[in-house]
Length: 150
Image (tube, rainbow, N blue to C red; front, side, top):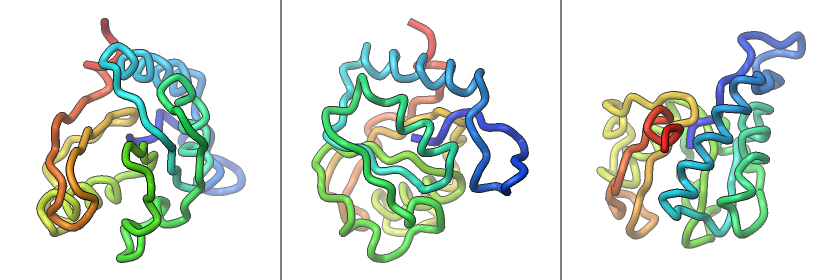
């Protein structure tokens, strides 16, 4: 999941940008859409950037477990990232272009494979399969507009 709509600037820098009121509202609407689809996770992994942490905090209704902050989700995917993800039904909250690169790695084996995804803030990629390079399939790509409307 890409983080929700965030403020354009923060006095403390990019990492401190919070979600806007609209970002929180729309993220909760996306969560309601995921609930309608009966999509839940066993754990949430989030980037350490404030907007991602705030997005992760809104996922309670679809998260059956805890939340782990992974620095690797705030930067380009590293080779060790996949080993950090130990839950079968994990929800990852992160940023572009790194989420698209991660999708490219796990579906096609190359970071460039996810470049065609038009990943809006609050959008979700639903992946299934084995968590390894080229081991997963994209079950659905869910733009926030689709998830927000019943």
